[in-house]
Length: 564
Picture (cartoon, rainbow, N blue to C red):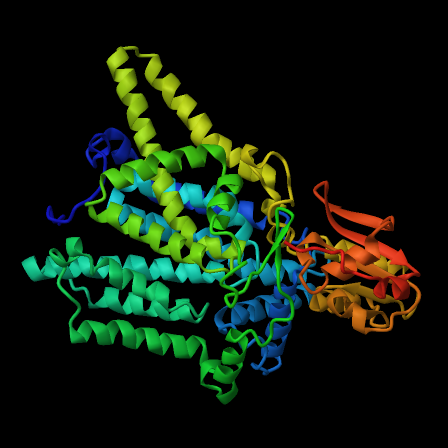
């Protein structure tokens, strides 16, 4: 039974009694299945076309250690994702040794596949939350925009914890919203038991923490229901509800992440938080260096980083819909759904923009809010065109405008997403002016050019050759895969302190330029022609130099190198 005191933001011309909504109601499951399948296909396409980046190799090594009973690797991150990768790798290994001998599954696919699944399934979670507040049309559009969103796709294809964090955090929000609504109805009418929803929310938040140590995401939903608007409607959590929610959260967290109880884990995590494991500083953005660590309050990443990234890596029609949706949400800010989106929007963008450390993948947690707001904007645009068509009294104008809106705001983003693959991280909309790899080279390339570069070095290099770069785990992994464990690796950041052989390969990437190595790179490559350049989708990703003058270059006066 629907409680009329619970505010919603469903447009009047899209109420549950409309013919369109009734049709969608009958085919909701089919529509949602198609949306999830579409999201999965976009995410899995060419999944092994890009080699591992440094963080992913760390996950591979940790997962392999898990399979051998060693859980001491990569302690700065929880176990859930590495456990899933371990299962995926074991299944792929068994397949490759048996039925799949002629159709091998690469490590790149096996390692990234769990995130691809959960990234696609996140559309269902977003659908559930959007439907609770805004009705079926907005819910389906939100799920569709997530499935075809270029930023969501590029992050879901990386073996990083953010995909699982978003899935379980927003799943927890969904269950918590259901619990609060059921508790409000229960107080008035004794209609629906709500304890099960608090247990489900607690389990989801436990898995969220077992994905990434971001406990403040749990606090956001508490803060939302602490707003005056909601305190008038929903009863506060009683002791029993707290025990159900937080007790289940703690239990599930410990089951999924038992390594947290190991004596050395907390000590290592504190060492990690204190930047004890950080060996490089600096992030190259639009040709300028910025500090990208929390310790530097001055000289850190620009506050406009995420807004600018959103502006150039989101399909233009989605940006237009987002703008319309923001106006609509602000206009209805006193309604439950609008206040939820405003809080989620601001409590993400403000703190994450103010801290000096920024990465593209962190933006994934913000994107469900962005896509729901854009979906609201789309429904408003459809409403406007329908009003225009009705006022014109033209029978042909209604289908013509609906077709135009569909082509511009739905078909075009879908086509753009499909065309951007498999190198989704390089996508730029027209606002980016085609300067691919210029704005955020570290995040856009993410070591994408290393695998083909290393393979060529392995093919050409003489026994015992030396290779310099800035991603040691990646080089070690692919050297071993090529059977070239005889090759010697050194970091460019330490080149001034090493005695190098007279002939050495230097692998230079814009995304791997730091304060510690830029002077040496400038000195070593100045006036030198590259031996070759590895391009990804036509964009230079890694440049290789081979020179016999490194010893001389190492001792050059580097005082003229200026960093900004």
